[in-house]
Every structure is written in structure tokens, then in C-alpha cells.
Length: 97
Picture 1 (cartoon, helix red, strand yellow):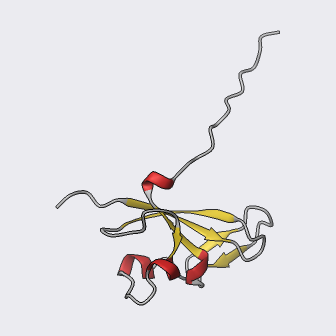
Picture 2 (cartoon, rainbow, N blue to C red):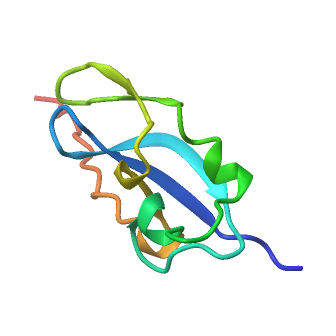
């Protein structure tokens, strides 16, 4: 048996309607090939236990600072490793002058 892919979890915020990281990853044998909501991907099928446990965790809105529960499956997003695209980080260097 090979290594299971590790999926990032994002949430579509009900406060600001942006996507925020939940800082949680799960391993799935068969997950989506691109970013997709839990509701869409598992429509008509049962969810594995590791996906079910995501619901009811709390997330933070990075815009408002409010926390909220991950209770709506169509707002919880699974992001495969190949779809994770972090913005480049800029390193500021202080000058000696």
C-alpha cells in the first residue's frame, strides 16, 4: 500500500465569503483531483471518518477575527497536494545605512 495523499482543508467563510485555511490536513485514499467542497465530492456517498471529524471544528475569519464552527459541508473544501499554491513570501532585508 502506497502513501495516501495529504489534503489541505479550507473553509469558505460565512462572514466574509473568502476562503481561509483551517490549518488541518487529512489523508485520503481517494480524494478530489482539484479543490472541491466536501458536499460536492461525497454527494450520494458516505464520508470517511476522517472527513466527518472535520465538521464541528472551529475556524477563524482572518478578516473579522470571529470564530465559527465548520458545520456546513458545502463550505468545507478539500484541496489536493497538487492544487496547493501558496503565494511567494517576500523577505525584507534591512540595510546597514
